[in-house]
Length: 145
Image (cartoon, rainbow, N blue to C red; front, top):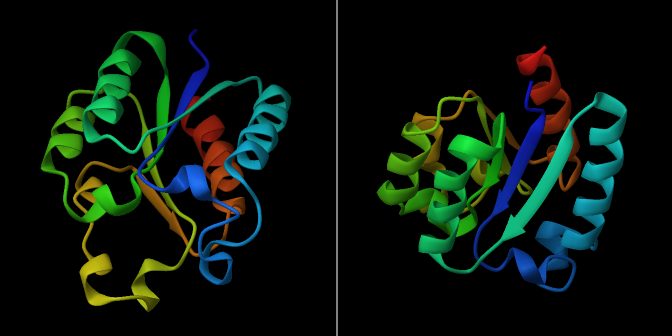
């Protein structure tokens, strides 16, 4: 059985650890990738992390996941609130999808309270910092068991 999990990240997450650390913390995306790879190995999952500032690149990875991944963990960042195209791509993926947000979006500006991705997601983790990724990975292992 395919045990590869795509961990997809949207715009500005390449600046994680540098951009607004009071909101997003000091850990970098490389730290997230390292932690997920280590936990994934413990759980018998292979992780593949991808980040892009371009909506189409994220959609291309979701399409690729149809044949290459058992599940998707996605932090669409600002595309959460705007991208019907990412929602449509996720709707074409048959495996589990978990949505992650580093900050608690419900304590922030009102436009961040709506998520198109949540219409497809099997679960949403928000407000746990970068630990949300490993929490999502643990949940993914349970969903795929």
